[in-house]
Every structure is written in structure tokens, then in C-alpha cells.
Image 1: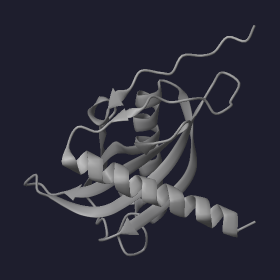
Image 2 (image 1 turned 135 degrees about the vertical axis):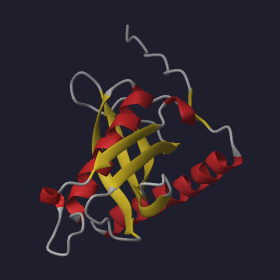
Image 3 (image 1 turned 60 degrees about the horizontal axis):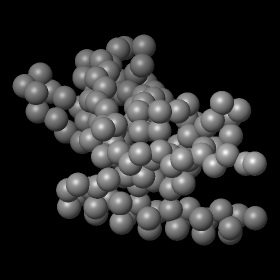
Length: 163
């Protein structure tokens, strides 16, 4: 007899929302005294992984960095605030949006980057495993879900075109 696994309980977007603060040090700067883009990408990936892990209660792996928009440079001596939240989930995958801000001494934040990443939950054998459904409570969360479904379809089309 095959034992069917029960579906994980649904969770709210706010259940896994994550914020991280990173000071920018001189060793992380390029020749223009701005943060290396790759350093910001690494921080974004860490925050996205924390969001996905909190939602799935599983180890996760990054499957795709779908969209990464650099809107402004990050100068020396800045604080970078990274805010991650789920936007959409599939059966085993989760789309995470991470917004990155430069925080001034006054506390004012300026958006410098928006990224969408797709992460997959893994079971004990490193295989994709089901994730909880996502409960979207606010109009903004519902709009993100709808946009996430469109991005998922575009990803699927890109994958089918590349084979």
C-alpha cells in the first residue's frame, strides 16, 4: 500500500516575510566606490532562501533568478536593507520578490533593486517536494500573485523555446 503524503497547511505571505540589514564595507566596492552587483545578488539570494525555507519548512535551492533590475548604485558607507516576501507558489516551487534599499542616516530608504527568484523545496533525498499553498490577504498580495502567474508562464515559454 502506498502512503499518500498530506498536503502542507497553507500559510500567509506575512508568515515568511524577511528583512535583512547589510552594511557596505570598502572590500565590497568596485573601482567607482559602489557596491559590486554580484555582492548584492548574493545577499538577495540569501534573503530569498530564508523566505522560501520559512514558507516550506524545507531546505531549498535557487532554480532561477528571473528578474534583476538595478535602479541606482549603492555607495560606500551605506546600509542596504533587503526585504523578501513570497509572491506566488506552485506545487514545489516558490517565487520570491526581494526589494533592496539604501537606507540613509535619517532612516529614509531609496529602492535600488527589485529581484524575482524561483526556489524549489527539497525533501530529505534532495528531490522537489510539495510546498504549502499561499494565502494572499491584501490587494497588493493578490496583484503580486496574478503577476507571478504571468511570469511563471513566460518562464515556461522561455524554457520550451530553448530546447
